[in-house]
Picture 1 (tube, rainbow, N blue to C red):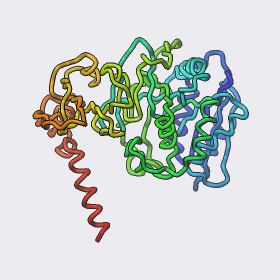
Picture 2 (picture 1 turned 45 degrees about the horizontal axis):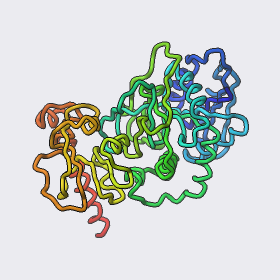
Picture 3 (picture 1 turned 180 degrees about the horizontal axis):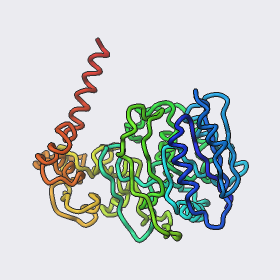
Picture 4 (picture 1 turned 30 degrees about the horizontal axis):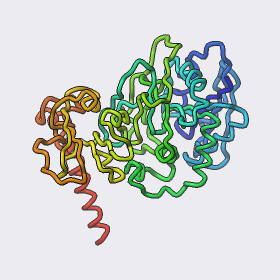
Length: 393
């Protein structure tokens, strides 16, 4: 299989050593796999020296040393030139490690999805956290080893030539990252150096999916760097790796019945459960999407003064299964936004927080996480308004 491993490096020597160590220890079967270490220009040459001396036993090694600093977005996007030589690329930023058997997932996923127009890429990382809402994320489980999301990935991903060229063509025409309610709001706070926000926007606007493994093949160390200047002690995005001798993966077709999530981490299978289409209903169980597109029907955990057509509890996990299984309760509501109604009595916000964090009551939550974690939106809005007042004066 014509695939290369591409390590994206800058000035984090320890991170590069850690990643290359995990790659060296991985199982590639009988394949010879090329390794390309691309080093952006920095104030030190320690990474370049280490890369030159690193021994790669699984194929050919090449070290690319950039004479000028490109910045992360340009550095990543420039790797597309390698498609002149390879059909697929495994792009690995330096603050991750790979699972020993990651390559088996890579090759089988490429074989399965390289001709699929609805797939934009393959993720090696699997979320345990919804980064948009900072709440735990657990996808609906099936007999398969993977599912689909309209979220691109930077902590280990596979680019396939056909799909990447389609994205790159779109990217060249969409470098102005204009606001849209269809895009998660947090992406508009990401820096100009982010390439990931473009790939995620591409997926959302073009109805494309990334393939995600249920059990992660990479994990992230959040080392201090360009996008993480504060601390290298952050373990929020550390996830369990796939260990053991797993060499065969059961991969699903991108079919209507497959487990698919949108760009807001909302389960698209709920449309069929409700007998509604995406054109007429907004799914918003996480409470971060709102009634996106001003649809008539709105399935949400938020409280609103609309007519409640149905309501569901918050008893089983993941939360969306309460709708699928019609679990009774007053925690998730299906509104008809064309009809006024009474505000639901019960505080679904409280129930959702306790449900997400596996806490029995508010007292326990505040003792563990602090009051600020229980009222994040209230505190965020307060400081946002305060900042606007300061700016005006």
